[in-house]
Image 1 (tube, rainbow, N blue to C red):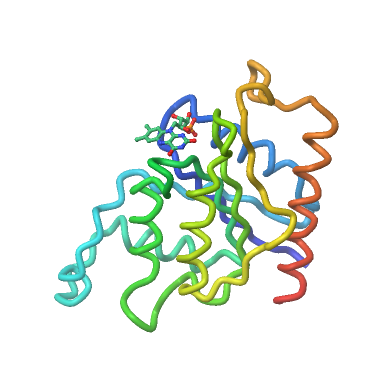
Image 2: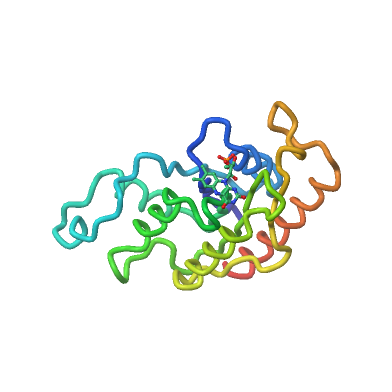
Length: 184
Ligand code: FNR
């Protein structure tokens, strides 16, 4: 059956390695899986007053609607200061409110952290994982997706050609697909 997968990338940078890795991941899903990159740029910073006073920015409404239509979410993120980039945390917060109307609730998720460094975005991966526990998103546990030394994996055109790396990426997607099917 058709599934809609939303991809959120935690970097706004034009040449983002995370974005390039996310694009490679997007090619590894079964045919009946539709992949949409959901933009988190330009979302107003979360302020509870906007929800409490019914003065909700259009960009929040659009974002909440877009997430609401998805069956599952793939997060691909760099690490900023051993945590999640603020822009991604802001998107999580916006989607989580008003209380009781979270658009994240019960949606299966997978987390891929990306870094040019050897620690592979471990801190971002686990800080994000902590939020997803509270947001009630069943999340792929294994294989863990820490993509380190990413500049050595990516070709100049953003592709990945190493068969071992592609096989590893495919194993992550397969575990995600299994989790989605189990939860549908
Ligand atoms: C970084 N970077 C970084 N890298 C890392 O592995 N651990 C970290 O804690 C941080 N901290 C950090 C903070 C800030 C504010 C910036 C701008 C960068 C380096 C980061 O991994 C690198 O810039 C990546 O290229 C960012 O990912 P994208 O934009 O290529 O997807």
